[in-house]
Length: 71
Image 1: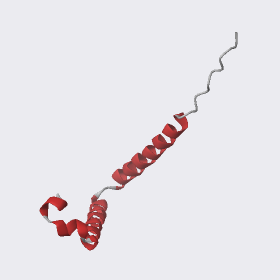
Image 2: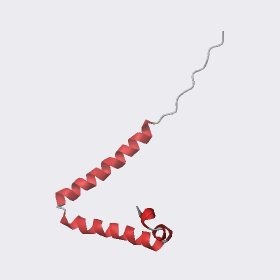
Image 3: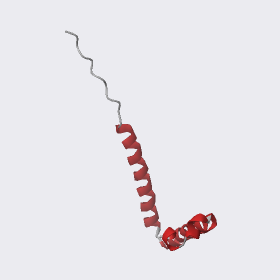
Image 4: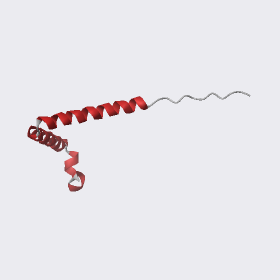
C-alpha cells in the first residue's frame, strides 16, 4: 500500500526505519500485559518452532544410486 499511496515513502529509507521502530514499540507495550503463564507459553512455542526446523533438516537424506548389474 505504501507504494500506491505515494512514491516518496518507499524511496525514503528514514520513514521505513521509523515504521519498524513503531512495530517494535508495539511489541514492548503488549508484553507487560501478558501474565507469566502466557509468557512461558510463548517461549515454549518459539522453542518448538526451532526444534521442528531442525527435524526437517535431519529428514533430508541423500538418495543412494542403485548400481546396474552387468549381464
